[in-house]
Image (cartoon, rainbow, N blue to C red; front, side, top):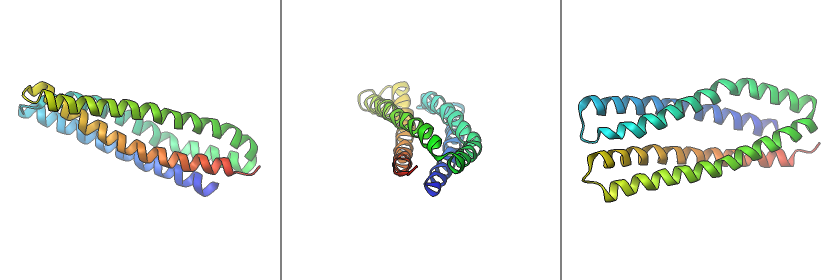
Length: 162
């Protein structure tokens, strides 16, 4: 169980750095598009809006993970029944949240694609659509990986004998 927990949180921390990096790059691209006067400069709006979420979420996960892992390791070592009783429902909540995230990300991806397909001659709509497609597809991919990691960790919790 300890190995699964360490792997889960290490991967979460690594992915949080990727969130931060992509958020910063997205803001850089948005600034470039806007300053360049590119015809699709409206792509900057969804790039920046979602980048801010990526930076906040990534930073939150990155900076809390070490302390959270240390607390959980100690709890597992000293009170495994209490650990399982508290960590299992927490992870079930995390897993349920992924369903909501996927719905939102797929909806934004679809909206972006529809804007590109049906309003491609409108630079503002096409730009917003492009930004939505890029950011929501990225978020969806990373959340699918995170969901798989969470599932593995939750399964390990279920197998923990106390």
